[in-house]
Length: 239
Image (tube, rainbow, N blue to C red; front, top):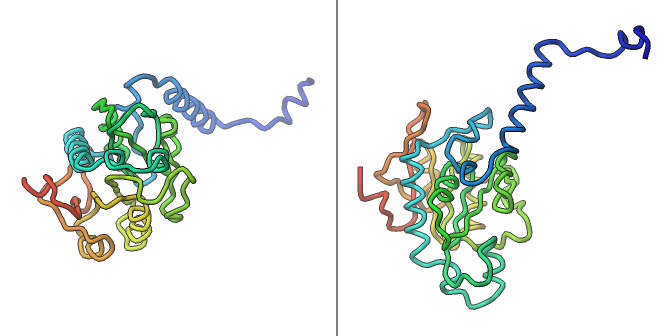
């Protein structure tokens, strides 16, 4: 190639080149994750997708609540048909007689904490818009709240013992659409995490009530954040 041809090729600015290098470095970071490290809270950083991670203490409290609530009546404990076992997913295999199924909708830090706890009697799915969470394999389900029930065929209606959801935006539209997803997925129990300003709308859409427990985030939010449930919850027994 001649020098004149080299000069005709587009050249990246130093800023664009730095951004490209940063992108490749980030992709390598997620590719290199392995073992239990990939479940650590914060291993995938918050970005512009309206993401705010819970503190490890809050994530643990919500994960423990999900296990307690789901464990009271796991899907397969009372399953009478093989299709319920199939719909209830993922990788526990046919030899597991009793396990519960949990859906984390836009709540990745709770999913990560559940996985850190190494419970082999729970099957968990993470419903997320952010494709970085695809590192979790089959348990990752791409989810866009604008298309509330546009889900893979393997996700059967009412196949989760409890749904934990944290709508990405404090708006009536976002909560309404996320509520459609929640009602499609759950067998009954709902644990919703959203702003205190959404209390009335949440009660109307999902029949949930505000709990005493106050969740905390790794970053300070501009709005008060609360948990809501539609069942008798341990989150309502402590301040």
